[in-house]
Length: 181
Image (cartoon, rainbow, N blue to C red; front, side):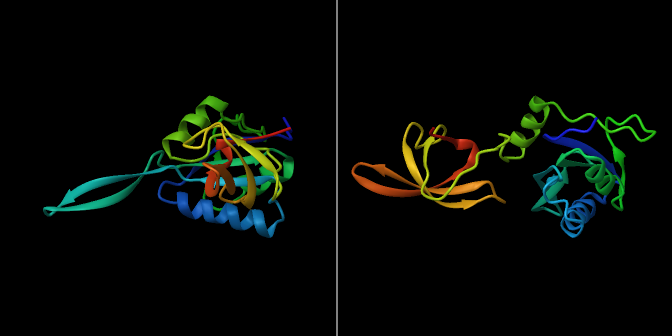
C-alpha cells in the first residue's frame, strides 16, 4: 500500500513518552533526509485548570495518552524510519507482519486538529510573494490581497489587503485563503 499522498497516521507509543517520540521522529526525519515524506508530528494535548492546595494551576493533559499523530507520505523508507523510532511500539491500523497501516479518514483528523486549534486543510497551495489571493474565511472574507511573507512551517502568511482606500497588513492561516487563477 505505497501511497504518494500526504496522510495522517496514528502511532502507538509508551505512555509518557509521547513528546520524546515526537522529538525523535522530527530529528530522524531531518537527519535521514525524510523531510519530503514526514511532515508534521503532533501530540494532542489540552490545557486544564486544576485546584491543588487551594491554588489554581494550569496543567497540560494528553488528549490521547500513548498516541502520537504523524502526517507523512507512506513509502517503504518513511514507514521504516517512523516504525523504528525509539519509543514507537507500532502504527494503529496495521495488521502486523510488515503490513502498512491505514491512514485516518479526513473527517477524523479534521475533527482532532480543529479541537487542537490547528490548521485543518491539507494545504497544497504553492504561493509566491507578490501573488494575489482571495480571503475565504475570517474578518477579511471576500477581500483580495497580495502575499508579502510566507511561513511554510507555521502554515501562515502575511497579506496586504486594500480596505477603505488604505493598504492593511494582516497575518492569515493557509486555510483562510484561496489562490486566484
